[in-house]
Image 1 (cartoon, rainbow, N blue to C red):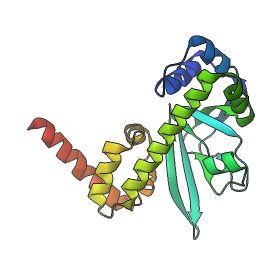
Image 2: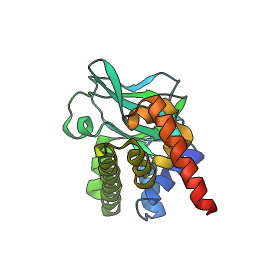
Image 3: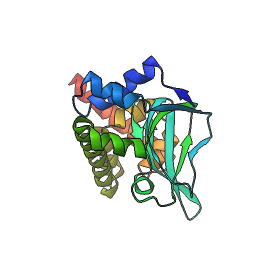
Image 4: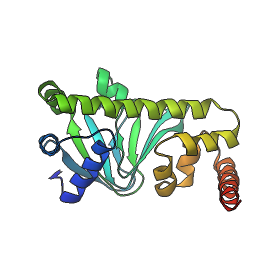
Length: 208
């Protein structure tokens, strides 16, 4: 575990600034509570049965979040550099995780403990409002994905993912196709077909 670097702080500031404005003083007060952790490709960040006690932001690599359904892994989220993640249910209620969070590349994350978040929120109104806006965006992201997965048409599912899920551009840029296919509840072959059709149509529309 290490203190966060200048470049880590820049990613952290960008993450918070995308939610709402914050003063330099509040950012400095927040940033001192973050620690950095590194994982090799294939290592688990959170295992089944562990309790989530941190909020995390990826500063390098990609994190895969999944559950097991009848022995088969099902992707529930993909988090590339610049975005945040945790097991929200375990974090809020203190229940053992049913999720696995795994580094699918070499990964660096910066984390803040739940206790530190609660203390900061109680004594700093600006930070409290910031966290409210952060969680608004998390809820919107989850609602958009829920709408995507409710659509039975694979073509519509892919287009909705691209057009409405905020993290889609980052995911398409940084994650392997097999993980995105699972994220969209498609087979790898189905995903490859829909991706080609969508991108071809998008390119033709630009030319027309």
